[in-house]
Image (cartoon, rainbow, N blue to C red; front, side):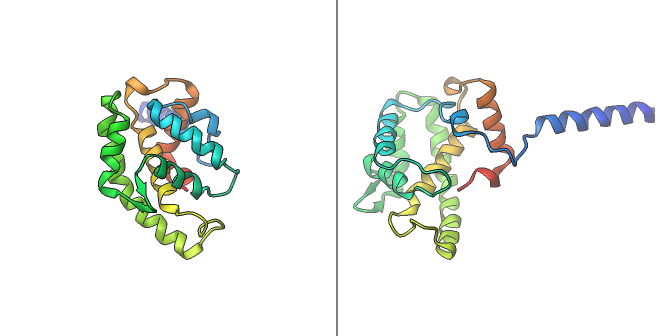
Length: 178
């Protein structure tokens, strides 16, 4: 009986080790950027802001996040319209109704993340923190992660790369957060 139990425990341990992603091996951006569907208006805004503020590897890009919030009118004259985030995103996702609860929950969850991250940013101000408001970038990244992790099946690209990236984001929360 103990031999069977030992064999069972070894198998469970082996399966668990295989299932858990290596948190030191972050997926490449290309592996997860198109895994969860986005509405066309949002893709247009992202393309416009990508052109204005291209990403530089290893550097925070607060201006990109600020651009997205300005273009979507989530931010007006430098002030984030917190009470309008859910309704603006809801309008963008109106053709994708199963995303609405995911987006709503992400916005709620990310408010606390933004507060925590801002406290850290103010302590260690990274280069570029004074150039643009970091709050939209933190909100945007958090909403992206929450949407990807909880992406409805109707919008999910069920590929090995996407599934690995999603599992990484679920299992390695400290490694994908800005």
